[in-house]
Image (cartoon, rainbow, N blue to C red; front, side, top):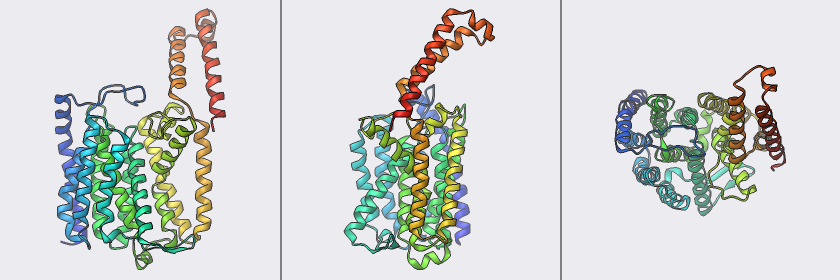
Amino acid sequence: MNFLETAILLFIGSFLLIYLTIPKIIKVVEYKRLMDDPDHRSSHASKTPTLGGVSFFYTLIFALFFMKSWGSFDEAIYVIPGLTILFIVGLKDDLVVISPGAKLITQVFAIIFILANPSFTIDSLNGFLNIHEIPHYLYLIIAGFMMLTIINSYNLIDGIDGLASVVGIVIMVIYTTIFYLTQEYFFALLAITVNASLMAFLGFNVSSDKKIFMGDTGSLIVGFVISILTLKFLALNPSDYTELPFLLENAPLIAISILIVPLFDTARVFAIRIANKKGPFSPDRNHTHHVLIDYWGLTHKQASFIIGCFNLLFVMLFIVLGSKARNLGMVLMLVSVVVFLGYIFFRYNYSFATLKQKIMLKRKVDKITGKKSESNKNSNPQANQLNGKFKEEEAKVNSTDETVL
């Protein structure tokens, strides 16, 4: 069976497996009452089934059995233990919340299996910032930190309906293309499998009557696969880049552009939390997608679509630049874009307490006035008093936004 036939069968099989089994998972979750209860920072208002990520795990295990012959260094044997570890910790976190420290430790154990495989070894940065050969111990440190960052960054963007799936689909399409062009067919098939899973899951995630979340189980597994694909991308041989539309030394910047959404959002949120003297993993509603929804009034689908399109356009821009520009110019371009985006979203920084107060006050005003004409509003002293208070609080919040960072 050639690559194209295998890819089609894996895509269709993975899609159908997710599509047909998620309704069963929803029924079990509802029957056992394992649903996610909304809290003060949730973007949903009713109890929603979680554990959708369970379907990702068994789909990937089945797929790895059929694609293992396409690997050059028995990669599937090293991927399965890592997937199993993250499946267990993600499942436990969805059922009984565990500490960020415990999650990090288990992620390290999962990453060790990947770093032990010679297929992922990076011996050189191929001239990126004039860096060539790197010692093995430095590779282990950089690769381990990079994988931890990617796993947790992807986990953090799973905050609204469809976002993690849309961003994951964009990333998988790009990596499928890269590994197909470089004839790394095992990794192309791995990306195709995850892509099919995310596409099938997306329909349920944005549904109004059959909604389910992927939970930490799903986001940790998908983030783990993304980190594996990124590491392999950076470990490609120089001869492989003759088929790619960008210069060899620009590979690290292309990888950053592919992951710009989770990396930028995580860096921004961590900076806000630290500036506000909070722990970097403390929960809040300061994520980019929360800003789009709470401040700009977008729906979950609209925010997910906009962020996904931005991710795709950003990658295309850097691929075009990477075909001619040297990495110093691309670094300056990347820094400029990040600083610009950072300014925009820091401008809209807020805390949930002031936002909630602002929303509740506005609802009181709307309820009393009943959306009457301006003349009727002026005849209602209580409405005028609340409206004045609302404007004072809004001005206070806006002034706070401008002074933060």
